[in-house]
Length: 174
Image 1 (cartoon, rainbow, N blue to C red):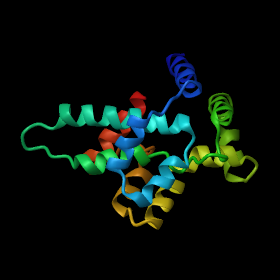
Image 2 (spheres, one colour):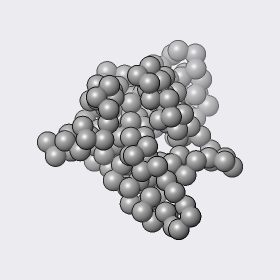
Image 3 (tube, one colour):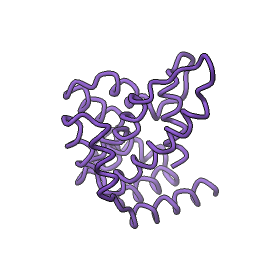
Image 4 (cartoon, rainbow, N blue to C red):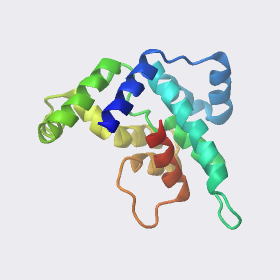
């Protein structure tokens, strides 16, 4: 039930999402210009989510970086801003995401089947956006970011980079 309440909060944030001029200036100071069309190609709600994830990731990095532990802050920041670029405008809008969340919640096996057999493009994007985004990032030369983003929804494994672990935590918190 708590997960569904979190999803309702996420929905309200999505339909009221704003990206300010200050937010855009921040994005443009962090991302290489080749990545900007990917960021701005996301829905405004996903842009806002990415900005929130970046802010949380920076806070988590500050908390987790103790003496002897290092994190590539700029890499983490880029990954946070780009982690959902596989969900582009026209592929999965807010109400499409609601459909996907409900389908996965109530019919998990069937939702996965619809995604895999081509019945639902929305579900395919929902499940595979990390891989889609990673391919887009590799296409513009951001291989290191692609590696992290492709794995950000996978179950944690030994050897995962600190940047990947922090990205997962920040994404889950938002």
